Image (cartoon, rainbow over all chains, first blue to last red):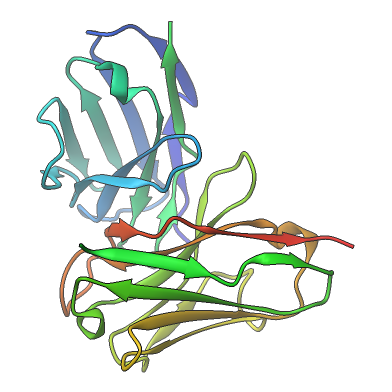
Length: 106
Length: 122
């Protein structure tokens, strides 16, 4: 089974900050990596698929990069509505989520 | 409006069974892979099972194998999850989710239901 890790597990940031979250797969997954945002009590929302493609309607402040085993989600300028938990997910072999990164207010 | 609506959750005793349903609307349900994803209270996401367009291919995470069965009825635009031999650790919100890509799945879930809570407790 492919295991996913994320770092950090949580971070505190301010509006306007640049935020970077890292995701690592236990084996190569090419670009089969997706990112989701989840707010409390809500279903996850797809942000980025295929490592770097922005889902329709998602602000361009979000971007993704990486391939193979190492991936990054970047929020270029954190907005008030971006405080949430972020999950990476591999879809190369079955579907496995990372443990999540909680972004909260500094 | 593209929508998924889950139902069937509730309180069940350990060892009991429950069947979850997910009714789809606003898109051609029969063209897409579908999945069940759960989230235990305060925990992360776990993809439990997925199924292809005609139900001929089904995949399960290890903890679901032999206990859970995913199925679909395309005539009713409905996805199901039959859960047997339930354990306390199955307590979670269960979401159904639609694959983003038509016909050939890429495993990215673009539409999610609101979730249905399953509580396994005596």
